[in-house]
Image (cartoon, rainbow, N blue to C red; front, side, top):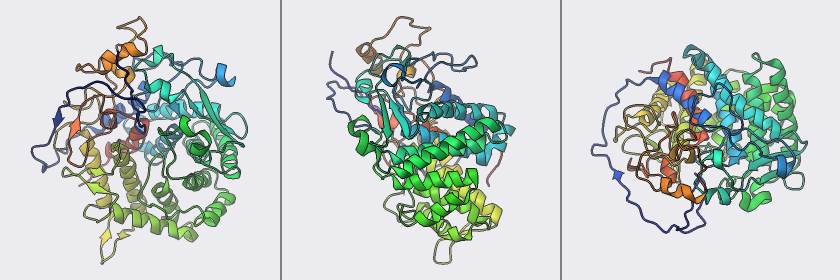
Length: 508
């Protein structure tokens, strides 16, 4: 059989592909259209959270709702690290547990609950959202249990990506990778500290003991990240690159971690750290970037809330940065890094564009709420002021595009609407379930399912895929086109907050 390499969102294939397949690119006939404005945001919210159950690794609970998934990776960490590293989430359509994007996913799920948890409760989804966070934080507590060490990845990505097999059948290398004093990783450790701190706020009134455990661990992990500085890409090299390289450096994660620790603990030391390191760590750098690798726009929006509430005026520069972010992302603004498709979708170069759409839209919505409560608007020059309502409209426009208000009239969320992607790049979804096919499907035996023209047999409800191929709004519903057809946890996590808000609030 020809050797086939199965990609991940941030990966570059290191093997040749010796096969051809037919790609049907569906191109929009009418790029201009009006919004239907009739979406069931509660249903979309429910499904966006349900997706995380399809990404679970480890021993599944009795209340697991996606029944085609079964237990997997039950020996993670035991033989290679002498630790229990079971649990957590697979990041995307593969079977690797990448700590950097998992921590960012956890932070964004927590931020969604912090800002929009009341909406989730009204929609009946708060408990499911809390469960999605705790599944991640239980794992993050495991990987940070050894002082001045963070276990940042389980699984050899090259081995995994050379196979197409169910997580339940997985026999690829489950190598464990860590950062420590001799091999620093301030980026992944800083994001992990942020995730633990944000989650401690989520559980503060619901489970005080667990919240304290999360906050104490966040403090320790941040101290390690700050004391032993360095990028995990430099320490671990090919283990994490080219999959989740930290192209942006680690300084933003240190500010991000400090910002969340300040919000969670209210301790002066973190406020002073932010003030002291604002310039050194580059809070003003790449202000319109936000995602698992780059936290700058998120830092500025998060800290701006305190400024807008009249509490921390000495952090006014962060609000100014946040205002600049808003002005740079608006339609019609001439900015080389952000474009809009003819159908109205935010578009940034690179793969898996929906990760930018959901993360940036979340910031638009969060900042609009902060502005609204402070009765403020954003000055964008030339006497132009952008209101909170305008920001909400732009965020809603992106959400509606994802749900089907686009030139293809197709939802990019699996299981939502009449038409959605059927051939997503996801091993568990595309291979027969254990119930349907009890016998093991070996590494290369899965290739025929990868290449099959048939729809995936298991519907990964709520999964949002990478989205259109380019700025033309075209989309290939095809597994080999992983950058367009692969879902990720960090696409969905910010979307949970967006959908929670719009499930309750209408925007004219």
